[in-house]
Length: 318
Image (cartoon, rainbow, N blue to C red):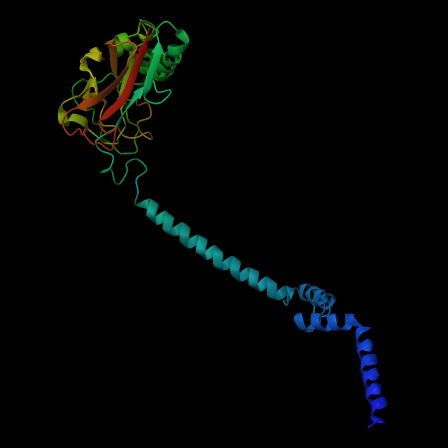
């Protein structure tokens, strides 16, 4: 039994030397693991393969294709997308042939008209103090700018005098330029800004202009002029004691209709109705509703505050 001990120690010593030899070269193990992770290739080898893929000098190929191959591919896609663009342009051309540039094909969702007011600066609240010019001067300036196109001289030069009380229907080809009837700002009388350049704002009696939105071919009122009526929307009706309407009794004359569109009706100016609020309660918010009255007019749709009516607030301070 005693002679076996040296051999055991020798084997043990040899094992220790074997372990020490393996520990002396740890980089070889890391390199082997890296090769296995990258498909047995180092980063340098991968970079070389990528460079060869981008440009192979021997075969003279770029990304695996020769110049002739790339040229054929580019030619194919050029012809392919050119044909697609040509088909799209042809379809658009055929579709546009069915549409008129002068009259919309479908107009059932824009009749009857909505309305809008001037001045319109800070929403639908007109608030100012009579004693402070800076509070009402912006409204006056806005009114003058808006009515510049309605100056009597401008209307006399561009438009013609028409017969009141009937529609001004114009025949001929739809592409012919249409004539427009004169609407002079002098028709607005006290709200024209001619006699009183402040439109009553300096006296606490403001003017507000109302116009209908333009609808091609629309003939409002079914032969009877559409009129305008104003009242207090909510609150005490005595807050609005007096309103004057111009021109006449606040109607849109039939001679300004129908409208033929901006392409052919070049000089057309929308008719206006001026509302002169001569007696409104001071130092109070007065909600006002002005509505169109006439055949075919709709003004009671709750979710559309502009269809046939307009809601705004007057606040006049001392």
